[in-house]
Picture: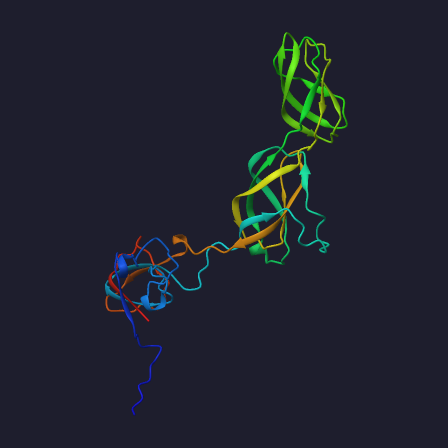
Length: 293
């Protein structure tokens, strides 16, 4: 019986690349679908645009804009944060905290203590978060006299500082108080006097809760890069401190069109001297391209 050896230099399978490939799926496309464009490699029922390290035969001279195997997209983007303490034995940080002095805001910067040593070029960066912060609750314990609807000038009393807000009135008597800043350092039961020019400065509220600017909820705004599960982030906001979370999970992103390399004036009848994962429609001018395995 004869033997028929194969060689890595011999193409055994061919796939013409066109704007519309097999099963109506574009295999020259700016849409990077990680599913294989090769039917024999793809069991999903839907062909993608990933040529999985194919070689390219060029039928008509032109440019090839392509992404090579091994090219990575953004690494270590943050998917989720965790407020629990899964690493309580670690000496690198104290227990996670909701902090104090925060106000509801979006796209806040963060600092990070990384759980994994990284090179200077791979330091975690870019994570921003959205936070919500609950205001204290209160009762109006004395409506006072001579008040005007609108903002108060300041407050006195209590164990903390920084409460700001507005009052609703009826004939100069405070009927409701709305917080615009919950302050820090207050205690449930604190009696706060509301100060306003031309009033009797004698209206008071009694705090029935005192969150003191603690973070209530936190969500990823911009996912950043190069983070690892277990990294500890601290939310940065002027006048606030101590709001920390652990990175619960991250993901590495697929490459994008920005990761492509353009081969200019590839001659007809030649094979591109690199293997290729994706051929992009933008800037590819060569035609009659055949992918080979």
